[in-house]
Length: 102
Length: 291
Image (cartoon, rainbow over all chains, first blue to last red; front, side, top):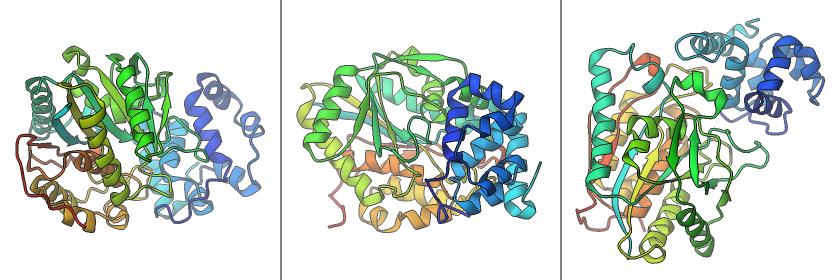
């Protein structure tokens, strides 16, 4: 699973980049994820995949894998050897066939 | 005529800092000695400035407005960017910039038909710049840096031929535009095999890594340009291994030179093959670039 399905038009790319660039948005995302998602023109299936932590579905839609890895860290944790490892394992679990890892 | 006095390629996996302490001793030894050797070589070369090419990792620009090359023109470079700090596990650093050289680079590459972008604000650095800066202790060495963040992962990706041509223009710029007697160091930061964000996140292609290290150390650029295709790098780790294109820029700048590495190691938690090459800038090999 590489870049062959990449679709740069997906709004989820902007969501992920904004989250990593803004402490305030990350706090808001943690407190009220739905309100943050409302701010982005996400497709229905795109939003559903984010909500259910279905990275496999997002990649099938065209999410860039590098940002997929960052979305996993934004959700599951970002600290070396701790949350970041959980994030990698959850991501791999989803991509290797499980789909939703909520 | 300015001179390239140091040229190297080295990986920048975040685990090389944040997960280093927990790594086996033999792995740790290779990581530490590799970057210590690179730092020592940079000092011995009496470099006046270090130009680093490294994958931007989508850290600075929107995915739909993505530059292939982005030069950092700041007076000083501070990192890592806040969100990446716990992920890398590194302390804050400040490295001297070289805004006049950065501006000359931007203008020089533009005149040579190479579209680059440049930014005077501090760029957002993740592991791309933070790992080599911290592991070589660049701030303590006092060598100013010009970072050039590169598109190694957003299609269409400038391939090995394009990156080599960019490197040739870079070499011409250094030799002809920079002040006489200036001593320039070049680092390609990235690789080896890895697949960040992919289904094979833990995959490391040891056979590919060893092939690559031997090839770039041989100085055989004709074979390199023929065989280091995007397809081959994707197979060795999608979206990550292609960071080796930063090494290709450096190779284009220096031409055929033999190199040496300081050992190769694989550690699953790093999620990336680890090995670096330092090229011998005093050697003169016959030109073996593909026609």
